[in-house]
Every structure is written in structure tokens, then in C-alpha cells.
Length: 200
Image (spheres, rainbow, N blue to C red):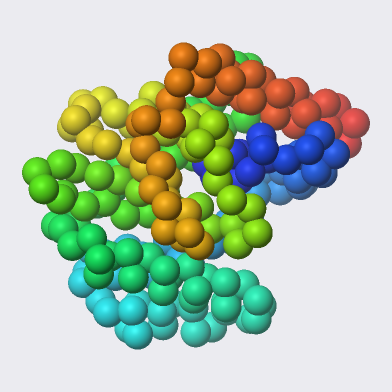
């Protein structure tokens, strides 16, 4: 399960959360609706391709609304890139597991830059109708730091960025209760997943 899906699940009501997690029983790992955005962002940031060229990744997508949403998200990422110039770098990636090891959360920033002497990695929040709150962002940043902020990336900063509002969420979203909230969210979603597997 990717990080933003996990965070959106946590913010959802109980019925919606359960319904979304049930999909992972039949399709472990789930489907990444924004896979094309991530592929195009790599071309745009690391290869220096302009938006008009990078968006070509989406040309053969057969689901119209998925193609449009990926294009809009990429355009928002491009606009951000223009407004925040820096040296593009390959972002780190990894994962963290829930307490019983049955649910894995993928930590895969879509782009990274070195700007004003600081290393920054970004996970885009792509949901058009769901705004990212500070408590939810705090859980995401806590997981990113726990899973990725070590070795060569010890001094990196990790961010979630809402591609609709362009608002950036970083370490300041972490509070004294974030660690406990994160573990509770991991345990809750893992239990829903395990119960669904037993019933399948």
C-alpha cells in the first residue's frame, strides 16, 4: 500500500476505510492510480524534460479520467518545479511494516531536490476532493523519517505536498502524539486487512 493511500484511509470514516482496505485482499499491493504521474515526474525532474514532453508517458492510458487526473497532477508538479528551482536528485525509497508484518506501507517520494544547501524529498498528495490535514501529514512525515532518514539520507528533509492547494507539509506537523497515532493507524488498518483475509 502506498503512503498516501494509507493516510487517506486513516482520515476516512470506518466504513470507507474498511471498503478500501478490502481491495487489498484480492489484489495485494493494490493498484497505483498515479503510477504515470510518478514515471513522468522522474523524467521531468531527473531528465530535465519539459512538461509537454514528460506528459507523453500518459498518451496511451485508456481510462480517460485517470489520464486527465494524472496530467493535471503532473502540471501542478511542473508549476511547483518552476517556482522552486534546485538540483534534482534521485529520491530514496523504502517501506515500513505494521506491527504484525502483514501490511507494508511503501515510502516512495516522487522527486527530490537540493535547494539552498538542503536536501528535500517530496511525496505528492494527489486527491482532488480530500484535503491533507496537519495531523494526517504528521503521520506521513513520521513514517518517512522513520523509514528513510538514515545512512546517506540522514540529513534529508521529507515533505508531503498537496498538488491542489500547493501547500507543503513538513516536520513541523509532527507532535508529541504523532508516534502513538501512527502506530494506532498501522495496527487498525492491518487488523482490518487480516480480518478480511480470514473471511475471504
